[in-house]
Length: 71
Image (cartoon, rainbow, N blue to C red; front, side):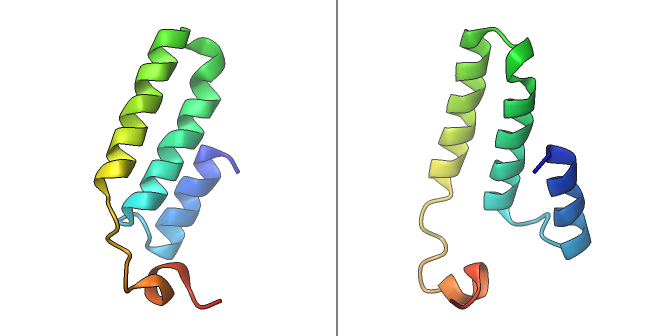
């Protein structure tokens, strides 16, 4: 999925405020930019995204069905 398609999906479904999906969007954009970035810039941006993801913690615990849908 392209970053543009994911952004349109997030907007259309009202999920722009869901931080884990915004992390996914950032990863897709970074993947798209990778060929044009020096390796050290790519790694720094990837580390930044990873740090932000880790800061989300386990906010979803006890809300699995609400957040991820029922299996």
